[in-house]
Amino acid sequence: MKRFAFFFVSFFLFINAAFMQTKPLTYLALGDSYTIGESVPLNKNFPNQTVALLKKENIAMEEPAIIAKTGWTTDELQEQISRTRLAVPFDFVTLLIGVNNQYRGRSAEEYAQQFEELLQQAISFAGDIPTHVIVISIPDWGVTPFAEDRDRNKIAKEIDAFNEINEKIVKKYNVHYINITPFTREATTDNSLVAKDGLHPSAKDYGRWAMKVKEVMLKEIK
Image (cartoon, rainbow, N blue to C red):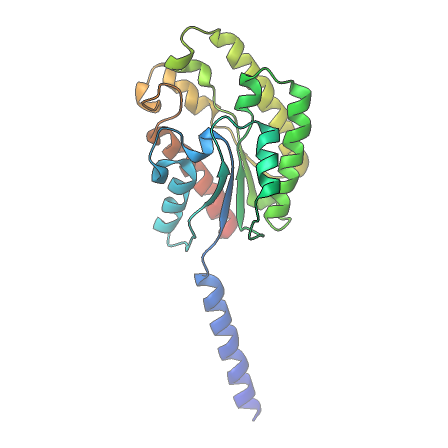
C-alpha cells in the first residue's frame, strides 16, 4: 500500500512538473509608438520579436498583450491602464514610456512622478516580482530624418535627462533596465535603422532590442 501511495505521489508530481514546464508564459508590454512598432508590421515590433526569439529557445509563450499607442505620454498610458481589464499576473512586463513627455515639453518632475507610478503598476502586474519587469530606455528621435530641421543636440540632452530619471527610479525598485538609446543613435550613419516614416525605428533595430529583452527573460526563466 505504501509502495502504491509513493508511486501515486511521484506520478502526480511528475505530471504537475510537466504541466508547469509546458504552460505558456505571458508577457505584457506597456508603452507608446515604440512598443506597438509604428510603421513596421505587427510581428516586427519588439514585443512580438521577443516572443518569437523565446519560442526558438523552446520556451512556450503566449502572444504578447500590448497596451500602447502612438503619441501617448505617461499620464495617457496610466489612463488607458485604468480602463483595461488585465488577466494578471503576467510572467513578464516591459515598460517604455516618456518620449512624448519630452516632445511636448512636459516637465521632468512630472515625468519622474508618473513614471514611478507606472513602474509600481508594472511590478504589481508581474505578480510583485521586480526581476520580471524590464524597463527600456527612451530612443533618441533627434537623429532621424524627421528631426532634420530641429535642434538635435537639445533633443539629445532632454532624452538623456529623462533616461537618467527612469534609470534612477529603476535602480530603486531593483528591476531590469535595458539602454537601447545608443542603438537608436546609430541611425545617424545607418538609414536601415529607421522605418519608412523617417521617425520610428525599423524592424531591424527592434530586432536588436528584442534580443536584449529575450536575454533578460531567458535568464529569469532558467
